[in-house]
Image 1 (tube, rainbow, N blue to C red):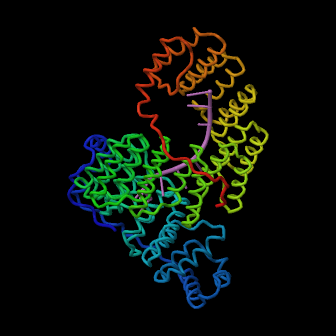
Image 2: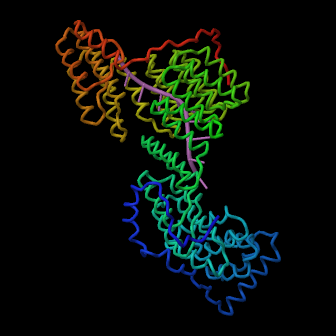
Length: 589
DNA sequence: TTAGGGTTAG
């Protein structure tokens, strides 16, 4: 797990571009410190007890050892009034080979309202590690970190005397990461290098995965230069970081170079992460190429990998094709799990093909797969979108009855269903219920509610609701504004709608094709063709992508729209087969 | 300590 720091500096770096960043951080260290002698751990020993204290400690230790089956409260009660924090450490000197008794003494001492001294916690952690109980050690180290400043120093000071092992620093490092003191973890890494200790790559991976991309990259380079050999998981964290930032090219570069630069081969997770990113960004071709490549390397795509492809196809409304991939997956011997089923169920829900949904639910049940909150949410959404609120509500109660907790997304799906039906009382009842459950409605919840109000003509109430939403710190998005703009247009207040569009731009979200077409439609319907034309021109200048033909009259624009549609929507209207299944009884999961 | 699924607008 551990090795002494390399005496020569690591030669390889992933990102030459980041070496510059690195050199600016290295001034904190002696320039050639790796080449200098490793410093020894401090020589510490506990202070000596007075005779009276030594006798008390001997009595306590003897009582603990001889009466180990009894409760520490009973054994140690008689010593309580004379017991001081120093006695804990002195007792440990006699109990170091007996971790259970070390734990018992610490537990007895802790509830008595006195802070456990840092030294005692550090020693107890060393004893736990040496006796093969890393979980207890990690808890003790965490306690020490939370309750004492300079606890790290105590662990280092007590290390040698208590004959500890290097893995205690792995646990200390992990405990610091657990409590999110990420800068401190990095400092500890550098500090430990001076003692010749390199924290394990796996412990460092936990840190890496919590850092922002920039810090991730600088830490990767810096630790590597200090002697750490990163592993495949580390590279996967980087790949994931780059993918999350939309930098699939950089992520792909790591995949290609990790073997040569770090000596770690890409695994199924490396490939799946990148494939998923390509799918998210709609680059199916890149995704399928990688899919083939991993197969060539003997890495078989699994349910994760297939699911990314299936998700992309569903998002592109190619759910039948998605199911073909699903079949291909099973043909290759990869069993679909509940996530893959949920993806496909959601795809069919979105295209309104409920018979296919029920068929998949049956299949899922027959495969002994257990639906979770996400599966139920997809189903509830599908039913409510089909106007089947009775069944949607039934499913909602069913999932609660099964002990699954609906979250804000589940509630929003149901709320949206009631809003679409104009049942605003039911929608707000659910909104209150989710608040009582301690759930926090998000911007999507409020957009659904606001849209419901607008559709009932209660635009002012919607406006008020959104003001409150902003007041709660939630950022309204393009959906929210568009729904409000639509409400304003429908009550004939185009002037306010245009003003809201300007407000939206000022607040951040850019007006999109929905925004423009909503207002253009209102202008057209009120005979204000000039304003509609101006707006269309503005929209075209911004190179927006119209998806639908806009009937605003005037052959020039119709021709323009035709050309735009041809240019932007090529290949988007491919025919979808299937969807002709029958049968519609709502299944119980 | 690394990968996948669910909610809003014309």
